[in-house]
Length: 290
Ligand code: ASP
Picture 1 (cartoon, rainbow, N blue to C red):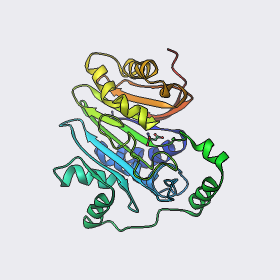
Picture 2: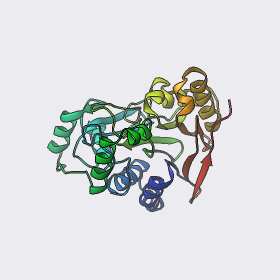
Picture 3: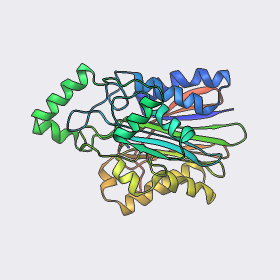
Picture 4: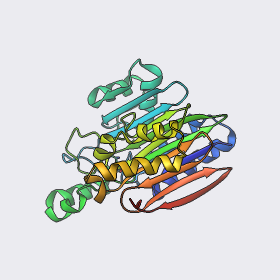
């Protein structure tokens, strides 16, 4: 039976509501995941993904997304994509319709438009209000330092051991224009390899990227660790080697070839959605003790 993991309480609910009925119909996991992320990107109430998410320091939304196929390690990604939804579809098109892995910024947007998507204004009134509030208040700016949550990362297992991983985000709220986090970086935000499993990340992208968190976790599984042990090993490595990961939330989640799943977090509480054996549940993961 297929297994699907998704990150964070609120957006996790939205992606599961869209993806699970498709899993039940027997659609390929890649389509279920794309449908889930598309629904979350389109939801104006989610402030960290797609329409209605929080912009960069110039007041412009820049989206990052990625997708990877564990059967042949093929992957596609976009970063700093403006005014286009769904970013995850564009990432998939990069994988399926170009010889490249990533397209960036204005050229990613041009590619998306050439492939048939229409540019649109993704800022909601609420996002504009929050941006104006942030711009005018040093106190609120302080509150948003490292406020990077609710990216949706999804990993799925189907058939006799095929893995898909994908992620979509607007990244660090009020980031420097042009900043790109871990989510669209293959090996950092996502990784899938049918020889071992799949992993994904969410949280402070700078630290997750430096750790090559998803690749590291899949390599841990390749060395024989279970999904849970592999996640804990990555998070322990981060806690040991990366001082900034200690006070910030950095999460890895994983699925192994035995169908086990796992997650671990450097700091704070993390909610993981799990669809397994036909049942959908939410797990809570607390700070990993070193
Ligand atoms: N990892 C994302 C980034 O740094 C943010 C997040 O997961 O909340 O862009």
